[in-house]
Amino acid sequence: MGEPRSGPKSYSTVTKATDVLSSFSFAEPVLGVSELARRLGMGKSTVYRLLTTLVRAGWVEQTPDSRYRLSLKVYELGQQVVAGLDLRDVAHTPLEVLRSQTGLTTHVAVLSVPDVVYVDRFESPGMIAVSARLGRRRPAHGSSAGKCLLAFGDRTQVDAVVRAGLQRLGPRTIRSRSSLERALAEVRRVGHAVSVEESDAGMSSIAAPVFDASGACTAAVAVSGPPFALPEEDHPRIVRMVVATAAEISRGLTARQRA
Image 1 (cartoon, rainbow, N blue to C red):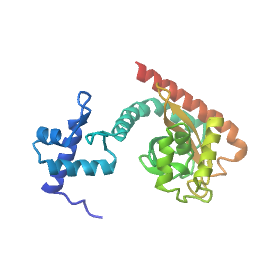
Image 2 (cartoon, rainbow, N blue to C red):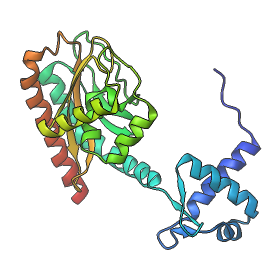
Image 3 (tube, one colour):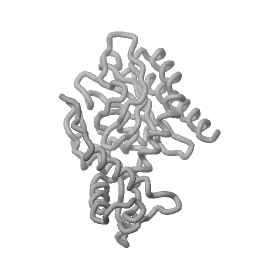
Image 4 (spheres, rainbow, N blue to C red):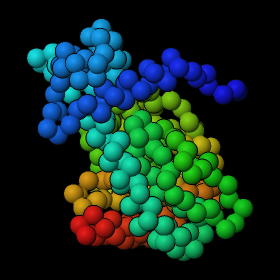
């Protein structure tokens, strides 16, 4: 695939859109088309088209009085960036220790609806290959990390995952909302998630939630490997180690954020 097309027109459109987003502030969180047009030196029709595009993309929302404000999607993106920087610093060593303890691939993931994104990982020292490459996105409903993040997250995130489609990923992928709701209720009950061939054929994983200083589930720690490396009889022992690692990272993240 070649490089994406670029040029003055596309650059100008992106620049104008970012100028619109940058116009909102704590002092002025709500702005109208006329206000934005005056401030940016653009025509009202241009500003309206840009706002319409940003609303469709979910970055801006319209208020009851037909003005505009930034949506929570902008806040969530910023939180992911800030949390991601702290998270990798805090999680890196505990994740490496967990890999040494279990002999499995370990990773930490964050939610980017409808997917999870793996932000740090340690490969198994053996010949166990996994699909969770660093920075890779995977549908949240198919992984133990995703189920943790959805179980302890906001209800709207579950709605968005369901709307995106519960596509089949492995032989035992959750395919219906009712099944997903039951699975998430179980995760909340026991405090961890198990996935056996839900994200990929021949792959199992166990995850536990990571909480930040506000008590929000901001990430999940998981181990993964083929069923022969993660047999059911070993699940209780592995769960204890994963939960302990997640708790250690939660404490480190909380201390960092309160410092």
